Image (cartoon, rainbow, N blue to C red; front, top):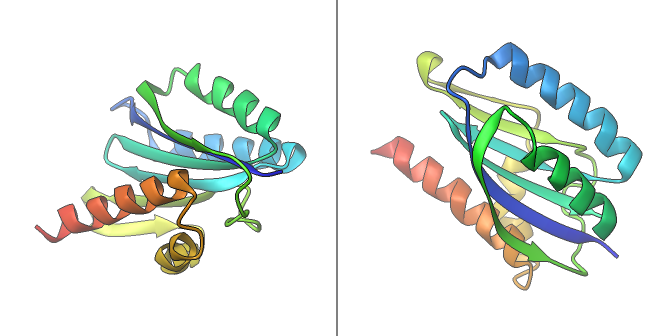
Length: 143
């Protein structure tokens, strides 16, 4: 059974892109071993992360994340159980808005299918919240 969890937090303002790259690399390695897939979206200090995988692995991974000194104000937004794995090829996909360069960094084209994935599984409240947060970030950039 696949469970999902989505949370929001605030990154330390001093978190550098290089530190984030190292964290992502480390996370992808651990996630592959634990059967975790998902996505991390970062806009300035705002972070939204969606994790999916076996229930115990999702909860252990989130406990490790919540204890990290790299961010604060960690809040679980939703949990969902018995969901379809939506990021099966991404041990941690990433999308980051880089204000100083007016561009986005990402690890793939998964973001283009985000709305479609959510439409295919309306009962997954965690995925719905991820999509809503993503859409809000995109809309805020247009203003």
